[in-house]
Image (cartoon, rainbow, N blue to C red; front, side):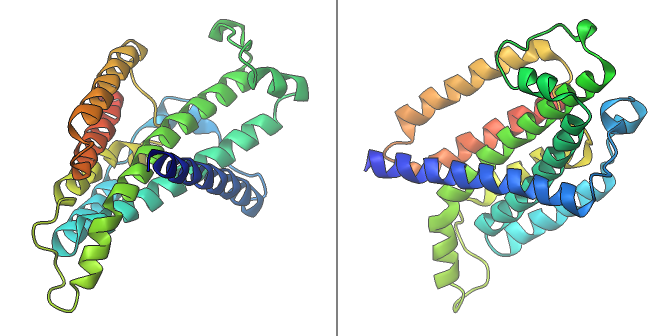
Length: 241
């Protein structure tokens, strides 16, 4: 059972990564490589626009309350996936402005040069990659949330003939939390933690969540969605502080 679960998770991550990367390449091709990178250069272009994300999240929360939390979680995952694909497209555009040897060097572990030694194009490329990886991390957690919400989705589908809204929905509150958490990720052109000093403490909290999942979520799998939604909220918190 463990190997089957591990295999399903690995397949999910592989599929998600391929779709995100291919979506980025398709986005770049559709825009003919004419994607603005100003958001990675000037602070003014990095200002968040929370109006449309709040509208989207409000609709998602209404969807969760009116139907089923699993439906809302899938919707959020798709939207964040589009966001990650857009950032991947900009990473590819930024790479196209660098010499080939620089791109290869950036892709290796030995490319930990201080920011002061980087050229403006290299800084843009690194910032674009960091933003893409941060968004992809949230997208991975959302995909796991979708995976654990599938049984609830099946129960909601089978219950449609009786009621359009699923009663005692275990994914309702995680869906609401995840909806609120992605506001800054969707509205921020460059989703990144504001203070790098907080990244390590937050990572330890996430490790602690993993320990709690092992202790309390093995026999009650439905509890995993609470830990996952809390992790997404914690990552979103890094953008605000």
